[in-house]
Length: 285
Image (cartoon, rainbow, N blue to C red; front, side, top):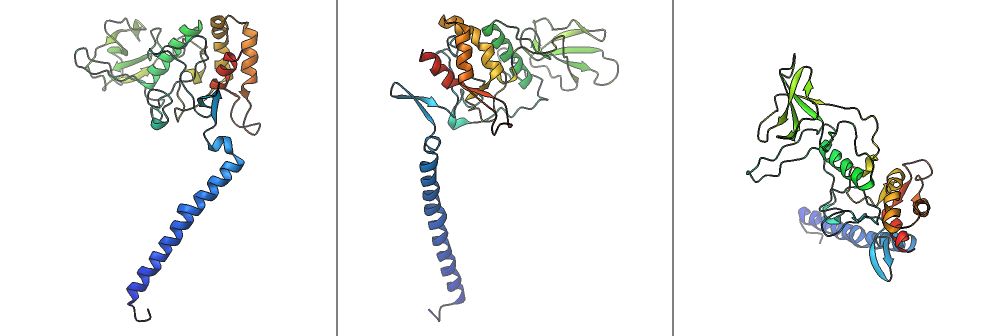
């Protein structure tokens, strides 16, 4: 060994370091962390699974849809917030839409071209708000949304100076534009396939001052797996759930309160309602 070349000593030292680090970080550390998790946080470490009648029905940490085979909300259950994870709450496809607040212009589908177009984040919010409003029997209107549930956005030409043309770009012809004119110019409906990129984007607030439908009812969480909804969204659904189940709405509201968790450490975040736990409490009588 004394007469081995210097480079051989270096290779052996590197191999020993590799073996030691592999043992420490690849075996001992995971075993210690797993052991601590199982002893101190057994339920959470195993997925916080929820059982009913001896079978697993979900996780307290992961949301799920309460819809029928056609994707329609089941009236007797509280509904979760939207999810962009696969077809909804798919743990293998956890993701957000990655669309920002300035994403307000749709790509209209061209008839016969085979494409589906692309809905902007604003139109997604507007469509969800309208759907929730119809489900709960309240107004689904919100600022910057048209009555037919798309973003109230104009493209104005020229981009600077006195307008000579205005187009409601998210309302495909022959739909009537949400406003008849803009600064003295007649507003046109959007024509699929026509480019309006050169125009100035003008979102129109409208007359709605404050939306009835809460924000978490129309926006997806960053992970797409959020199991909770806000207390206002739960309370909005209480009347519909009570009516579908034929029970007093006071009883439903009491269950909401019982399944509401407070702010983390008393001051971080907002109170939240676990949808799965609430629906199981309803089924439990």
